[in-house]
Length: 121
Image (cartoon, rainbow, N blue to C red; front, side):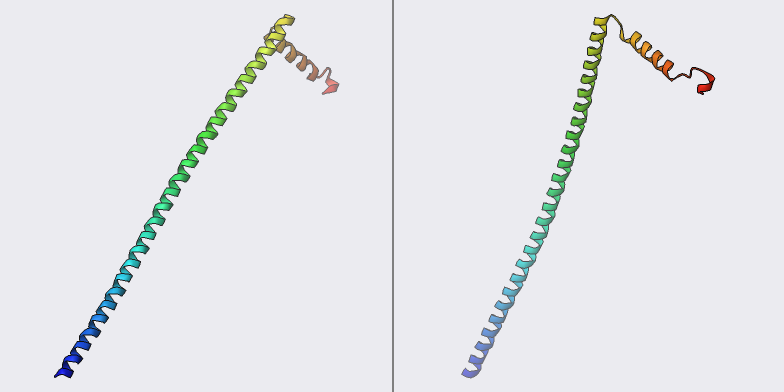
């Protein structure tokens, strides 16, 4: 009887150890699954943040490029106006207005390019 009792105790002890081992394995598997899920979520969140950062960067780049173009247009307009004012100042010094000077230059050019006789055709 005592032998049977000891055998039962050993069997119960083995079953307890097996159950503890199985619980430890299941717990470890659950922890590993949770860690993998967490890593997946972190990677997705990181990818999402990187995409948002790239979107903001592209938007800022586009805005900077647009501002650059606007500034270049403004600079060119100011330069053109300055050149126009300079020319008008020079013409006013010589007493010839810009329209009359343009007409004279066009007339001179037309005379230079017009054939003088039929033989020149």
